[in-house]
Length: 109
Image 1 (tube, one colour):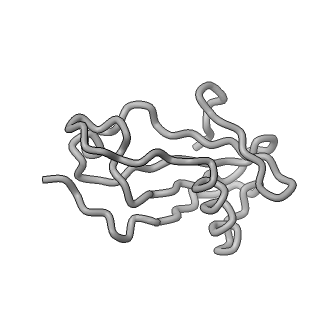
Image 2 (tube, one colour):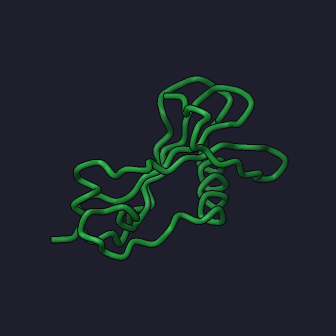
């Protein structure tokens, strides 16, 4: 699962450059606030395993206009550092690496 370059943002963690992207439009479940916001990260220069981060907040574009925080670059950098400590190897091919940070998420009803 490679990210297209359009719509991605660059971030440098350590000496490595990554690209990350938050889906602009929420999925149906995210739009209703039933599931948390997710975003994807990958190495900027070499293809490999994609990091998929599940947050503990609703998607900012949810249809119920519930306040959902923004995904900040500092959050992305922290998630990358955590995933690297947990064994994510961004330059090796393989299945997406899932980083679940959804503890405390409460779905909207």
